[in-house]
Image (tube, rainbow, N blue to C red; front, side):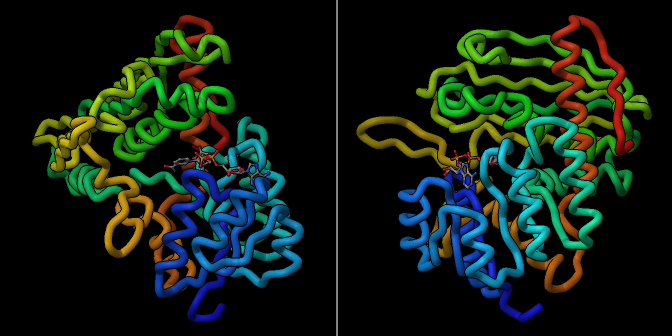
Length: 338
Ligand SMILES: NC(=O)c1ccc[n+]([C@@H]2O[C@H](COP(=O)([O-])OP(=O)(O)OC[C@H]3O[C@@H](n4cnc5c(N)ncnc54)[C@H](O)[C@@H]3O)[C@@H](O)[C@H]2O)c1
C-alpha cells in the first residue's frame, strides 16, 4: 500500500459528501473519485472536491485503482456494492446499518471476513471523545460497579420527514445509543422491553418515539429514550445524552447543546460542534475521528474503530426492540455473534 491512500466515496449524499471532504483534506489520503447513482449529485460533489465522478460502481472500479472506499449509500444497496468492492480488493469503511435485514448484514460480514480485506463500520459515538471517556471510566473501574446506563437521542419531526420513507428511527438513529450502552456494559443483552408511539411514521409502519429498557447479563440496566417528534423549531438539531451510574461514580454527557448559542434576525440556534461541524480546516468532530481511525488502521495497523460483529450485534438488539414492541412483551434477543 502506498503512503497516500487512494480513496473514493460511493453515495455522496448528506453523510457521504462529508466522508469525501475528510479524505480530500487528510494528508494520508487522496480523494480520487466519487460515485453516486444520481449524476447531478456525483458531478457536483466531484467538481467541488476535484475528484473524478461516476454513476456506477462498475465504472468506478474499472477506471480507478483504489486503496479505500466509503460506502455511504442507503443500506439497501450496501451488500451488492460491498461484494463488488471486495472483488476489486478495496478496503471498506461502511456506513451503518450494514444492510436492511439481519440476513443481509450477516452475508455482508461473511463476505468481508472471507476476503481478508480491512473494514469497519462508522458508529461515530465510538469516536466521540465524551463517549470514549465514559468507556475508559467504566473500563478502568473509576465508576465502581456499573449499575445503570441511560441514552437519549431526541431529534425532530424533520428526521421522520426526510428519512421515514426508507429507514426508521431505531435503525438509523437510536442504534448509536443502543451500541454505546452495549459497548459500555460490555455484556450480552439478556432481555429487552420496549414501547413505541406511532404518529407521522404510521404511514410507513414504524415508530416516531420509542422507550426501551435493556437488562444485560451482568446485571446492568440500560434505558433508551428516542424520538422524531418535536417540531424543527427547537434550537438544536439533536438533543442527546448519556448517563453512566456506578457504585463509585458516574459520567454524564449533555448533548443538548455544544456550548455555542447563536441568535440572528431569524432564530435562536445551538449549532452542532460535535458530530460533523465544518471549520477552517474542513469537517471535524466525531465523523473525522472515525474516518481518521480507519485510515490509521490501514496505514499503521492501529485497532479499527469498530468490529463488524459489534455492528451486527447492535442491529440484532434493534431487531429485539422492534420485536418487543410488536408482541407487546419483553424479548430475549437471539444473536449469532454473542
Ligand atoms: N454514522 C452516522 O452517523 C450516519 C449519519 C447519517 C447517515 N448514515 C448512514 O449513511 C447512509 C446514507 O444516509 P444519508 O443520510 O447520507 O442519505 P442520503 O439520501 O443523503 O444520501 C445517499 C446518497 O446515495 C445515493 N445512492 C442511492 N442509491 C445508490 C446506489 N445504488 N449507488 C450509488 N449511490 C446511490 C443517493 O443518490 C444519495 O446521494 C444510510 O445508511 C445512513 O443510515 C450514517
